[in-house]
Image (cartoon, rainbow, N blue to C red; front, side, top):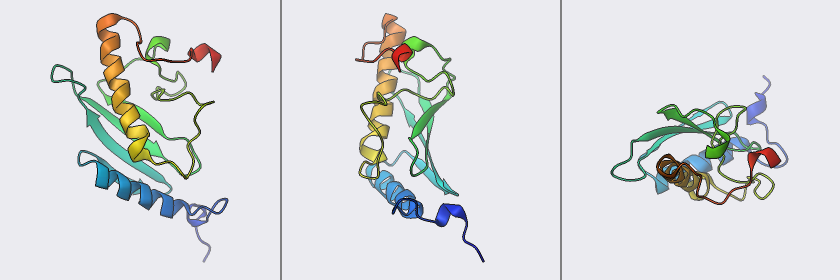
Length: 143
């Protein structure tokens, strides 16, 4: 019986081991996340309330080994706009400048993507108040 492709190591990395390691680290660091693994993808559901006066943002992180992690806002719906740093192709959050950061097996979601997601919502709240994105950024038109 042939093994499914998602069980086969790619470039010396066992994707199943990576997924379970990431899940373990996330569960150890955060108690507000719901984490599942389906086939070759880690699904992380979480929420963020940047301040006591903010609404609660529900998000989903999707991560497959060898791919860049993506975060999507589930509630409330946030429409794409260049000024709020989202990708127009799929409405995922722009959390880092791709040319400066490449997610590798040496990095972990718990101390990169999750904190950056919460920081993104804080800057989104500031954007709603000020009408300008206050976090340093690279113009999307240059990416």
